[in-house]
Image (tube, rainbow, N blue to C red; front, side):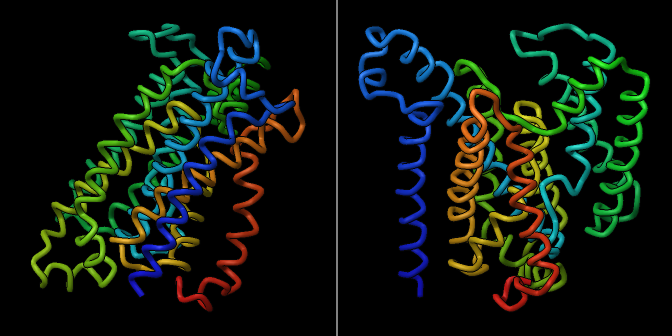
Length: 333
C-alpha cells in the first residue's frame, strides 16, 4: 500500500518537472528552443521567455502549492472537507487592502514592492490578527470560535469592500473588480522572491507537524489524549497557513477552489495520511494552477482570462460533485 502511495508521489513529482519545463514554451506560438538556450540571439522571443513566461510559471506553481497545502491544513483543523484557504477571512482582508489602495491612492511602492501587494498583504495580516484576537478573547482557543470569527471578519471586510467600490469612480471600480478575479501577471523574478519566503516557511511548519495533523483528524480530544498540545499546534498551523495565503493573495489576488480541490483529489490516490497527502497536495496544487494559468493566457490569446475565472469554472462543478455525494462514495467526506 505504501509503495502505491510513493509511486503516486513520484509520478506527481516528475509531472511537476514536466509542467514547469513545458509551460513556459506555450503561448500564442511555441517558443523555439533557440530562445531558451540562446536568449541574447533570439531577440524578443528570448526576452518574453525568460522575463515573462518563466517567472509567471514559477509564481503560479508556488501559489498553487501554497493554496493547496493551506486548504489541506484548514480541512484537517476544522475537520470540514469544504474548508478553504479563505475560510478565515484572509481573502476579504486582502481584497479590502487592495481596494483601499486603488481608491485612495496610497504610495505607489514600498521598498520596490508594488503598493497593491503591500496593501493586500497588510489587509490579510489585519484579518489574521483580528480572527486570532477574537478567538483569544473567548475562553480557550476553540476551533468553532475561530471558524465563526473568520466568517464574521470576512463578512465585515466584504461589506467595507463594497462600500469602497460604491464611492469609487468607473476606472477604480474596474481595477478593483479585475483584481478580485485573481491573476498571475508578473514580469521579472521579483514576485518569486516576494512569495518564496512565505511558501517555504509555511510549508516547513506544515511538513514538520504532519503527525499532529493526522491526530487532528481523529478529533481534538483524542489528539490531546495522545500527547498533542492542541492549542499550540492549532495556533502554529493557523498562522503558517494564513500567512501563506496572505502572501499568495498579495501577489496574485484571491484565486479560489485550488485549496479545496487539490487535497480532495489527492486523498483519492494516497489516502488521508498526511505524511503522504502533504507532498502529493503540494505537487498537485502547483501543477493544477500552472496548467490553469497556461490555459488562461492562451485560450483567447492575445487577450487572457484571469486565472481565478478558470479555477472557478473548474471548481464549481467539483463543489457540486462533493455536495451530491461523489466524495462520500470515494471515502473523502
